[in-house]
Amino acid sequence: MKKIKGRLLMTAAEIDLVLARIAAEIVEKLGPRDEFAIIGIRRRGVPLAQRLCQKIEATLKRPIPLGILDITLYRDDLTTISNRPMLRETLIDFDINDLSLVLVDDVLYTGRTIRAALDGLVDLGRPKRVQLAVLIDRGNRELPIQADYVGKHVETAEDETVEVRLTEEDQEERVVLLKRPQPSPAAEE
Amino acid sequence: MASLSHKDLLSIEQLSVEEINLILDTAEALREVSDRPVKKVPALRGKTVINLFFEPSTRTRSSFELAEKRLSADILNFSASTSSVSKGETLLDTAHNLEAMAPDIIVIRHESAGASHLLGRECRSSVVNAGDGMHEHPTQALLDGLTVRTVKGRLEGLKIAIIGDIAHSRVARSDTLLFHKMGADVWICGPPTLIPWDFDKLGARITGHIEEAIEGSDVVMMLRIQHERQNEAFIPSTREYYNIYGLTRERMRLAKKDTIVMHPGPMNRGVEIDSDVADADYSVILNQVANGVATRMAVLYLLSGNAGLKVKRSSR
Image (cartoon, rainbow over all chains, first blue to last red):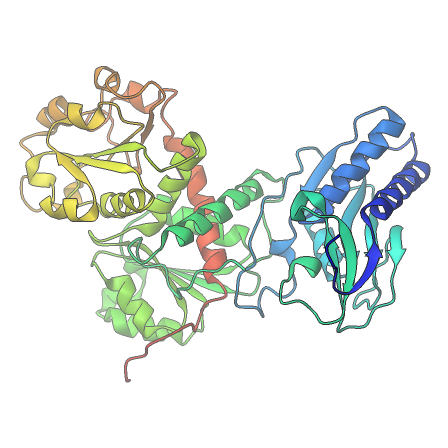
């Protein structure tokens, strides 16, 4: 096996177990009664949302709408950074009005991505409720935001990076805690 | 990180293939905003955009205005008839006065080639060329590129015929530059009096026969006769022009089966294009209009962080 720098937080098998648990929690909380949909936040929230969706559909035996949200246009740092972040399409082809939504992202950190995502959703309609599912909650919040479903809580310092690698995006699967922040913005974008 | 390395968008000439693809990809992502119930995103909130139109324009100006509004920018509109230009102010003075209002982006259309370049040199703000004389109209070419790419899936290797008043058309110049850069086979066609013969230097093939231009083409782009830019007779009559260069159903049979017809507007039905061609299934003229808003949103979004970038200021 390839040597991995940093502390290994989750293996591929653990990621799968955790997603199965979150899927079960979503079914339990929102239940068979509620009309709900899963929304993945680009980029790594998308494959996680797809996997959750599959697991939930297998349990409930009915299709669950799946959407993709790009939060770039809603970022709060657009006026201060000079490089424009790459835009990708938001793909939500169903009506979110009066629907329960589960937002899915890989890492919950400052909470700013989720703030932007909530603004993005409000522009698309008025959902009945919005919940949040994340693979890793690494603390250090800068906004009063919390997740409803958490894969794993990790104590981190600000000079550390949680790197989530998923097969669909990165051709490998694991979560690692790195000491020095990587120049690549991939893990926290 | 995706970014344009320019402060201004003045021409297609200045753009690399990667930058053109970046703008088209961004425009594609932004198209969805116009399909929403709330057609507004906050990306340019707090930014000020000045629309400076020295030439009459409905389509381009409203397209820019809509793009700016959908990005939540604050807008100021100046047109030549209501501004100090009609009171004798020079473009440079106008530019410096506008600059003093600290806009982030200035969109300019002017009857003189190079007007936007002058503004770009003098101003800290980003400048977008919305058409300068007979020179360039880059956002039109970009939206045309997006329209073709959306329908055909690519630009490379397509035969694209641009037919009509090439000499007076900034759209023809920008389109030729863009499609050639992206690897398409560009043909231009029109009456000899309306063809600038140096267009082969831009990478286009030139023909006087509309049949040769249309034959086997993937895209047929028609341009109107720009009477307002002509001070002499370039064509004997519009009737004769229609007979020799008008796009008819019969002539369209020469093109590929899955060809598309484009027109940047305004259209003169019965002169350069037949009504039944303009309204046919293969006409994507209205897609062009819709793509115009998304393309301009993309340009504004990508430039919005670049004000003050690499400015060479002349001494004042």
